[in-house]
Amino acid sequence: MREVQDPIADRYGRKDSNRRPVMILGSILLVIFLIWAVWSTVTGARPTPKTVGYEVINDHQIRVEFGITKPSDRSIGCAIQALKQDYGIVGYKEVYYPAGKDYLTDSVTLTTSEPAVTGLVDHCWFY
Image 1 (tube, one colour):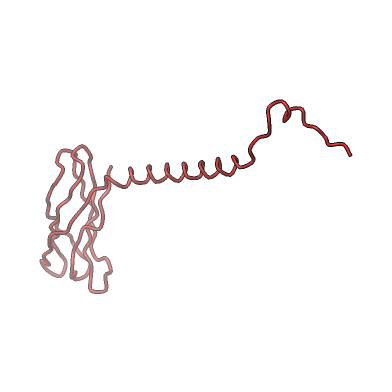
Image 2: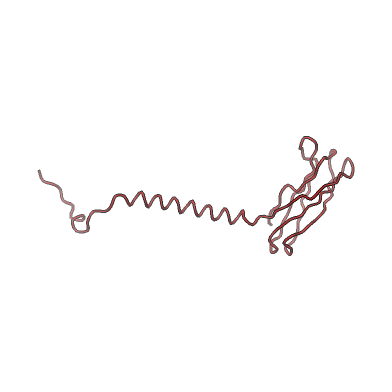
């Protein structure tokens, strides 16, 4: 019986069949690395708030004191919350700070719908 000859393979040689899985694996690893690099860049420079203290003024007001670390060239906004005994939100306020300082402190008074037992900075974001 005669064997069918491949003139291209005779001229240039056979391709290594193991290259394809290596190329696919390399591509997948590259995509995973790029996703990680973008994610860590976006989430790495987030403003970091820290609640320093709070004072319940009366049944309808609470004062929250806090500090924020942020890049000095970015403006930020922060959500301040007052919570009741079962962690329900009874007061909320957004505050905004311009670029300029890398650390700032502030005190915010919230009006509450029910008596609050604690106050805190929920989160901050760039705008």
